[in-house]
Image (tube, helix red, strand yellow):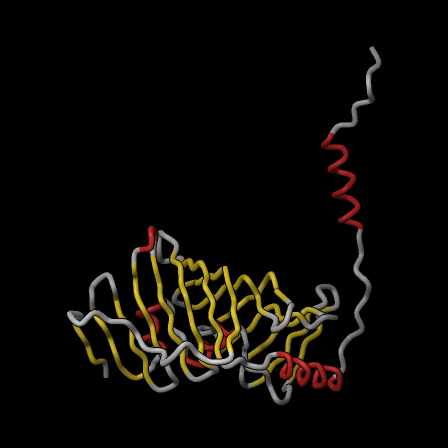
Length: 249
């Protein structure tokens, strides 16, 4: 009986791995101040904020032993509403926020909190302290773009460009100007958002986000992402009439 030659699978794997290890990316020319400014202007046009954005996502917090699921609706940059569920669809909470105030309904305790929007109060809802502009930027995936660049750092090996401004630090991978990360604030209060698995059709968005703060880490994996011409209505919470209400000062 004829025997077919046997080519070990692990040998084939080693060859493929070595091919990828030896692969080199085409060099990318170091960006100039003019090309950076031009690219940021183009991004500002691409990153237009739609009238309404609706998304669903899986959420994990390092402080929680179980995952959460959320649905969020964002009306421009003016307001947002987030609903959170635990395992088996158990309601966990709802969050509504504007630049001036917020309301959070704790479904597990049947208590609704309302007060001026401050990062430490947002931490009660999401486990991490976020200012409103960063909360909106997180769910819209639109960190603020600088009008001007204070400084920039180019890493030719990683093909990444760090752009510094008073609004924070943005990291892009060139030549396609893919947003890799955004840093807000300074150490030890620095917040870092990283982006991965970009969807580039129509309005671009990342399917994976990771938010690292001094108080903990939050990760989101988007399931759906929909853009609408108008919000579904006033973004208010559905709070049971028998819920305890607490006014925060």
